[in-house]
Image 1 (cartoon, rainbow, N blue to C red):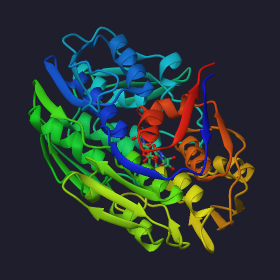
Image 2 (cartoon, rainbow, N blue to C red):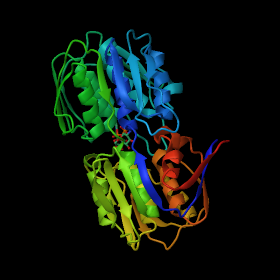
Image 3 (cartoon, protein in one colour):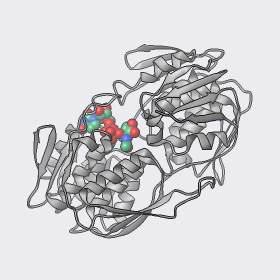
Image 4 (spheres, protein in one colour):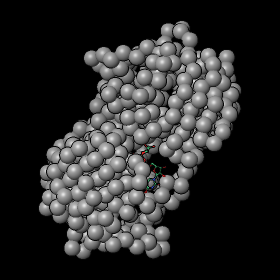
Length: 429
Ligand code: UD1
C-alpha cells in the first residue's frame, strides 16, 4: 500500500489549480442512467472513486469514453467524459461494488425511474458512522415505489412508473436529495422535496438535469419543485470546482504560512470556511484567478466551530480545521453535528503532538508550540488529508500510511503541493 512522506516546515508559495468536485462528479455520472442519449461531463477529476463508478455504471450497461486526455506535467482542466446509457442491461448493483463506495447506492433513483425496478445492495458499514438509507427508501416509497429488503439488497419496484409526490426529509441528506431529485425528474406529475440539501453539488446536479430536459426549480434551497417529464436527452455539463479541495489547501497554507492562489476556487462555495479562516487571522482575498490565501508570520487565532449542512461549516473540512487549530495560539472547540463518529483523526494528530480532548461530539484543541513528524495512519478520506496538513506543519518527517483513502478524493495531491514548495513524495509499495 502506498504511503506519503513529508518533510515538514516548508512554507507554501505559488498556485494550486482546483479540480472538479468529486461530490458533484459522482451524482452527475449517475444521472447518465436517466437517458439513452449521451451525457458529456467536462472538468471531471481523475480520482479512484470516479474510476470505480465507471465500473459500477458499466455493469448497468453504460458505455463511457474519455476525451481530451491530458499530459502529466501540464496544469490541466479535468477530463471530458462521455457516458451513454443507451440500454440498461442490468438493474442490479451488487454488494462487491456498492460496499466499496456508498454513493453508488444512489443509482437506485435513476434505475427505478427509468426501468421501473432496481435491486441495489445496502452500502454496509462505514468508518465515519452508521449512515443508514432510511430517507432514500421513504422518499422512493412516497413516489409510489414498492420497497423490500432481502438478503442485504433493497428491491424497489414501480412497474407503472413513479408518481410525483411531496417528500419531506426528517433531516438534511445530500445523497437522499440527489437520489429523489433524479427519480422525480422522470416521475409522472409534480414532486416537492422539502428539507432538501442546499449543497452546491445538489444545485450542480439540478443544473445538469435541466440541460437534459428536466423541469426543476428551487435547487440550492430547502424546497425543490420537480415537474416530471417523459424522457431526458443528451446534454453537456462542466463539473463545478471542488469546495472541499479548495478549503483543504487553504488550511494547508494557513498551517504552514506562505501565500497561495487557489486557481478556479469559488469563494461563494465555501463562505463559512473562509470566514473561519478570516477569524483565525488568515488573509483571504478574492482574485480574478480564484482565491488567494496568505499567512505571513501573523498569529493563528483559535476558533469555535460546529459543522452544519450547507451553507454552514462543512463536515468534510472538520478534520483539516482540527489539524490547523492544533497549532493555534489558544484553545479551539470543534463540534461535529453531521456524523456521529468522525473523529478518527484525533488519535493520529495526537501522534504528531497535537493536544486534543474529545467529549462526545465536541473536540477541544489546545494549540501547541510545535508538532513533530511521526508515522500516522489514514482512516478515511478527509481524515487522511488532515494528517497531510499536520505533517506539512510539523517539524521533521511524517509518513502517512494507507493513502488509498486520499486517492479517492484528492487529485495529484503531492504534485500540487510540491509545486508550491512542499517536500512531499509518494512511496510506492
Ligand atoms: C455526502 C458527501 C459527504 C459529506 C456528506 C455531508 C458525497 C459523495 N458525499 O454524503 O462527503 O460528508 O454528504 O455533507 O457527496 N442519514 C440518515 N438516513 C439516510 C441518509 C442520511 O440518517 O437515509 C444521515 C447520515 O447518517 C448522516 C446525515 O444524515 O448522519 C447526513 O448524511 P448525508 O448528507 O446523507 O451524507 P452522504 O450523502 O452520504
